[in-house]
Image 1: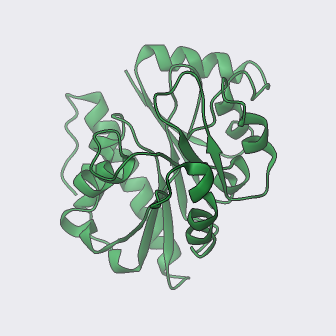
Image 2: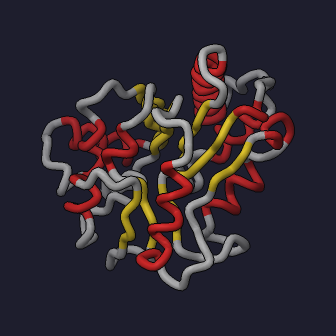
Length: 226
């Protein structure tokens, strides 16, 4: 792995997170035939993906999937699958197997059953789930203004189709239950604004207001930089 640029706290954070996730995968691969990594989209994890991609690991035995996905074509700029392909499935990590959530169905409601079958076939519990958090306190696509939030927080099904006024596209998200099925949880956030949101989330317990709260009661390694 490349050396962290200590002059850039976000770059250093990304390198530290990549090292922690790589250790988790290595540890599990010593005990299991395959390991599973669940990652999030957005702009924050790009540096983390780039650092992890150049890490030496038995990537051919690693499956990677997403915490959530927008219901857009894989070539669309908003596609998380596209982000993973361009930023994570490169260099050493090109040997990993990516399992996406998007199907050929016209809507996430129509595609959820097929996508759930893909997810159920993976090696749970996952070695690691790397969550992000929006400025509104959402994580994955557990969104406070989504009519499906209560379902996504409570169901034992692996996936939920989600629509929300705050979002341009409908989505599929792993349920809170499925995201909890991990040996290790990481939260990767940057910026003072998100630090303040996280502090507010830590001061209460209503996940319907700030969905990130659904994960604050479990062991969670928080990676934050200004």
